[in-house]
Length: 290
Image 1: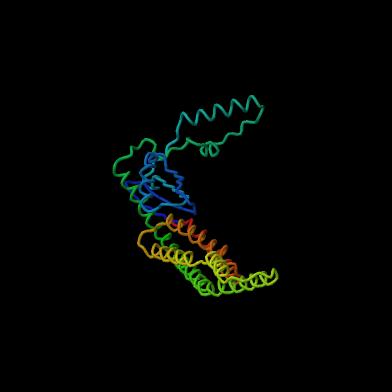
Image 2 (image 1 turned 90 degrees about the vertical axis):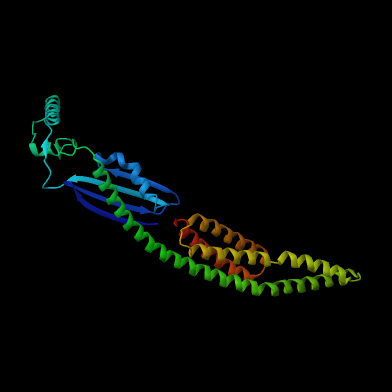
C-alpha cells in the first residue's frame, strides 16, 4: 500500500526531520538514509516501523542539522589544502589555467563543517530522533489506513458481485443437468432403435446418473460461498491479514474454475467469465494489503 508521512522537531539546537514513503510490494523492503550523526539508529528505526508496516517498499530519510542560530560553520583546513594542492598539480600536468575560486572550493565535500561531526550522540538526541520517526510513522499509517478503507469497500463490493453470479449459477445448474439428461436419453433411444435392440430403462438410468454426477457443482458452490464468507470476515476484522486474503483469492479462483469446467453450459460459462474478471481485479488489490 502507498503512503507518506513526515515530521520535524527542534532539539538542543538541532533540527530533526523524518520522511517515510511507501509503495506497493508483496514483501517488506526498507531503504533507509540517515544523517551521519544518527546512522547507527538504522536498526532501531526499522524496528519501530515494523510495528505498523508489514508489506511494501519503504523509503525512510532522517536528517539531523544544526539550526541557523546555533550552527558554527567551520572550514576544514587540511581538506581545503588537499583540494587546492591536487587541483594545482593536475592543472600543471594537463596544462590548464589555474582558475580556482573560493566559492567553488566551498562546494566540495568536507570543506565546510556544520559542527555536528564532533558532537556526540546522546541518549536525548536518540530519543528525540526516534520520537520524530514515530510521529512520521503515525501520519504514514493514517494515510495507508484511509487507503485501506477504500480498498476494503471495493473488495466487499467485488465479493457481493461474485456471490450474485454464484447464486445465478446455482439456480441454473439443475436445469443444465436436466437438459443434458434429456438429450442423453434421446440419443440412447435413437441408437437402440437404429440398432434394433431392446431398450432397457436400467441402462438409461445408469448413464443418466453418471451424467448427473459429472455435471453436479453443488459442492463447488458450497465451498465458494464459504470462501466468500471467510473473506468478508477477514475484511471486517480489526487486524489486517493480507496473506490470508491472498490465499482465499486463490481458493475462490480454484472453485470458480472447477465450476466452469463442470458446468457445460453457455449461461454458466458467461457467469464464470465475469467472476474470473472480478477475481483478477481483486487479486491485484489483495497482493498489496498487509
